[in-house]
Structures are given as C-alpha cells and as structure tokens.
Length: 241
Length: 148
Image (cartoon, rainbow over all chains, first blue to last red; front, side, top):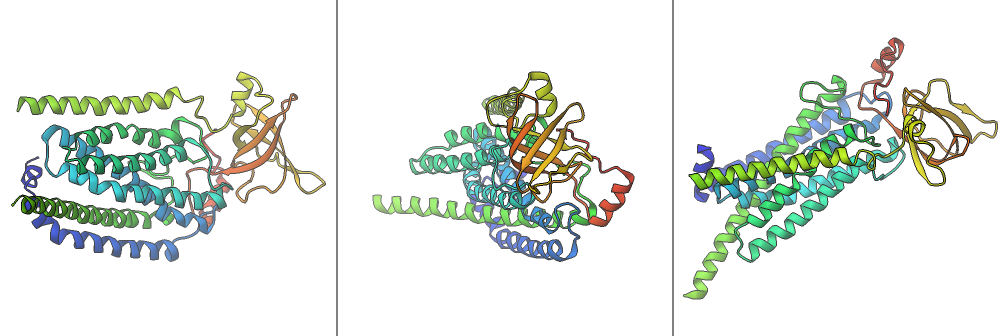
C-alpha cells in the first residue's frame, strides 16, 4: 500500500510513467512478434482442427485482457471508493477503452474460429453471450465515466458501476462448466492445461506481449487524461484572470 | 482512519455480494441457460415436442450410417446415460465424427427420434499434435470425459 500512496502524487507518477510507457509498449510488440512467428511456424497443427487452432494465440490473450481489464476497473473502483486514491478514477477510465477493444477482438476472433470448427459464426450460448454482455458493459462504463468527468463528478458513480459489472467475471469463467454450452470447457487451469505442450508454448509469450502492450496503452491514456485535466484547469484559471 | 476502514469493509462486502450474485445467477439459470438438451434430460423430462430445440452430446461410436441417397445421415447421440437417434439430411461440419461432440438443431418426433435441420460440431478442450493424438487413439485415452 505504501508504494501506491507514494504514487498518489501525480507528478511522481508521471516521472515513473514517462519512461515506462514506451518500454512496456515496445517490449510487448517485440514479444507479440516473437509469439506470432512461433505460433505460425514453429508449432504443429491440432489433430482435430488442423491449422485453425492457431487462432488461439490471439483469441486467448484477447479474452484474458478483456476480462483482466474489467478486473483492473473493479480494483481501481475499490481504491477510489475506499482510499479516494486520486489516480484510481483516471486508471479506470484509461483501462476501459483498451479493455473494450480486447473484448471485441476476443469476440471477433472467436467468431472467425467458430465458423470452421463448430460450423457457425455465432450462437447464443452461455459463454458467447456473457462475453458479448461484458463488451456492452464496457461501452456503458465509458459513457458513464465520461459524463461523470465532464460534469466534474468525483467518480463515485462510475466506480459503483465498475464494482457491479464484476458480476460478469465469474459468469464468463464458469459458464462453460456449469451450463452446457457450444464453447468447450476451460483448457487452462491454475496448475495444468489440456493443451499439449507442443501447441501451448507460444501462448505465454503472446499473453505477456498482449499484457505489456495493454499496460503501455493504459499508462499512455492515463498521462493523456492527466494532461487534459491540467490543461483544462489552466484554461479555467486564465478565463477567470 | 475509521471512515476509511468502514468504506473498505463496505466496498469488499459489495464486491463479495456481487460475485455471489453472479454465482447464484449461474446456478439459478442452469436449466434456462443451457444451450442444448442432453439425451438424459429428454429421458427424464419427456420429449419437448412441437418446437425447435437443440440436442447435444457425443456421436456414439459406430453409430454413423449414411443412407443410399448420399445426403441423409443417421447417428446416435449419447451422454453416457441415455441415447437419442438422430436423422439429418445435409452437409455435416468438418469436425463431425464418432466419439466427438455434436449439437443438432431440429425437432423431436413423437417416436423419440430427433430430426435435425442443422448440425454444429462441438470439440473438447484438448489440443494436441496429430502424431500424439494417433498414439492416444491407440490407447483409447482420447475418449471424451465430458458427457454433455
């Protein structure tokens, strides 16, 4: 907690974020390039799906960040509501857009994957529907947080929305276990995976790469939001003077 | 400090309540949110006649028979506990095969058969290279362990 409170000072945060932003972003891009090369050329096809299985190297990280993004919004919301952390609202707003983009990427790659394997672009099964809901919840959050910020709100209303939206995370995760769905069960658990090692190994590289790029984008957006707030405050002062 | 602790407790309680609400919704919707009927659901609750439904399960080993007209396929869907005979006329998906998952869209007939208008392939969560699957096929460990 001590380090988080040290970062409560935006000036100190900016000092760290400035060099960290490009470092994270480009490290992520390099890892994604490596992972794409490995996933496209160095792994065998699946015994059942053939080459189609390679979509998982994009689909799984996109799903991970679509859901991870909302976890970030939920944690930021708690920090805003409990500690009134000055950067928490900024962080949540910065996460929302890339989170929604990755949720959309997950839905799109899933659809492209579903056509050759299942024989359908889209079905209203539990997993697909709950992920689509999460995408809409992101859009709602962005509209609400923007409206709150524009009216000079303290961010508590979007933070409550951020907490309430977490209801979808366990539903998405357990939809394929507790309901019967077209989507298969989870392949990756905490300790083991039902994906064979020969196919699995580029996936952690892609997960790390996507996560670094995501973190870089979030820092970039946080800096933009802070700079915008600063510029607006200065304009108001000048208008008064 | 005290107000802060109060807010922390409240926020954590709210988060816990939200997660529990999600899990409750999951289990409450178990029947309604199911994507398909399994053969044992049909056996237990009777045939859902006169409306379009989905039937899902495994294509029983050795049950796929192609009719002489070349487009009609007969097979049996099983979930380990019960089976349903299915008839389908049309193009089957690439991943349609025996001992693999299938979701059929169509209608039950009064005699218990299921007439499918569309087939979807459902694969399991295992991914492996072909040579490895070949080995495992021989030892029969590839048999799907998730019935429905």
